[in-house]
Length: 163
Image (cartoon, rainbow, N blue to C red; front, side):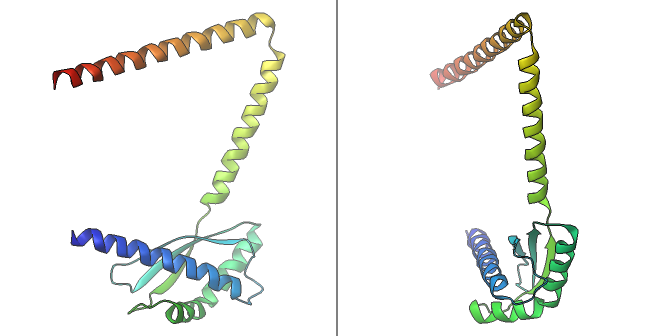
């Protein structure tokens, strides 16, 4: 029971640090800091001595590098502001880590969109016979899937009946 409370406390602290750092970044006057900087998550050590702050910057490589430099040089200011805003016994030492997962997900979304558009073009280029064969294949696959689901449900109902 105690571990669960500690876990929830850690999550609350991480969330509070993330929200406060996001607000602090809005107030920072450093021109190197990109306006498209997002704090994604924070991972604080159990003893609250260290905190990894994962951030993302939308923009080119120059904006990313300048933002990294601004965060590194402003980490003392950010830590001091955190100490004033949060009621923690120990304000953790911050280390900023770039996270490109948002950009990667945007890249994947664009690729999926391109593939979908290519499929639409191929579908338009199909002859009526090819379209009919494709629809028959899809219908057969759907029927087979529905049949497998029905078999699975029968198995579950049979287990419930035996209990």
